Length: 137
Image 1 (spheres, one colour):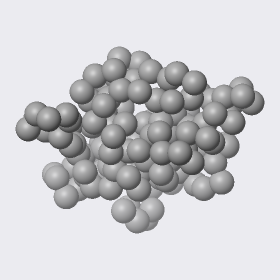
Image 2 (tube, helix red, strand yellow; image 1 turned 90 degrees about the vertical axis):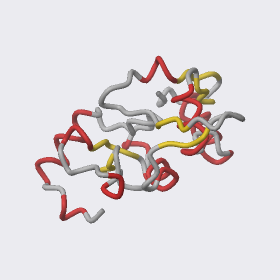
Image 3 (cartoon, helix red, strand yellow; image 1 turned 135 degrees about the vertical axis):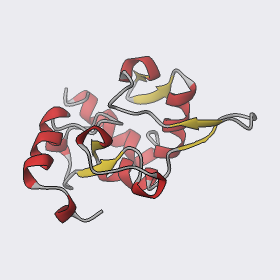
Image 4 (cartoon, helix red, strand yellow; image 1 turned 45 degrees about the vertical axis):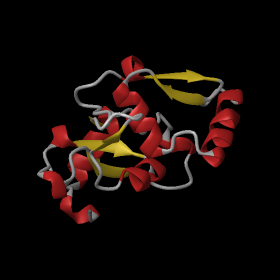
C-alpha cells in the first residue's frame, strides 16, 4: 500500500493509538532502524478497506511476513485460523513472552506466531538484547 493512500493525520492517529509499537510483536518503533508501516488487518485483496478500524501499526518484519494473508492452517487439522486482530483481540489472551520468545497461547496466537515468524533467530536475538536493556516489551 502506498503511503499516499493514508493521510498524515490518520497515520499519526494510528501510531499514537498503538503507542508507537508494532501491534503484533510489540516492538517499539524507537528501537527500530526502519520506519513502521500502516498495515491492513484484513487486506484489500480480501475485502478490507482503509478505515481506521482495519489499520494497524506494524513493524516491517511483521508486515513483510504477513503480506496479504489473513490466516493459516494450524496443526494437522484442516482448520483455517485467522490471525490476531489488534482491534478485537487482547494480546495477552493469545500470546506470552518467555525469555524474549513469543509463544502462542491460542490457535489465533499460534497461527500468528507461525506466519509472522516472531521467533526467527535474528528477531529473537534482537528482542533478547532489548529485554536486557529494559526496552522490550
